[in-house]
Image (cartoon, rainbow, N blue to C red; front, side):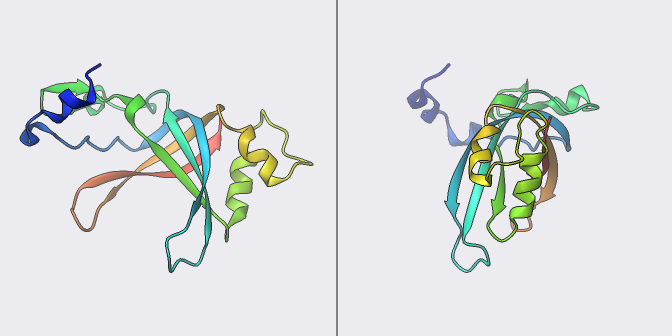
Length: 150
């Protein structure tokens, strides 16, 4: 693996933004969670943010769609480098409850939400990866739709 300083020596013209992943239902794993303050002016104040790693491709993705050109020719998209997250807001805790209860491998009944937050770290998930058009840049990006235990 190259060290960071050698990466910084690359000409700016050779640095390309990774392409968006094709939409689909990807297998993944819960990496961690954190508590985040909401930006000013939002109707919610606190966020529970879960971070996910992808462990494989969604079914039905064409081999050509698994490739990208980052400036040095076509290479397979490195799913391990893709960072995905899902936010759960304090004004809609029912969504967080549904997420936690979707894990059949943990017992949520009789536990508080706080106790269950850490129980899912390390467990497998199914992540709905969607594409969207950035209205400011007209670039295609990814966002997480639903996430369920699995």
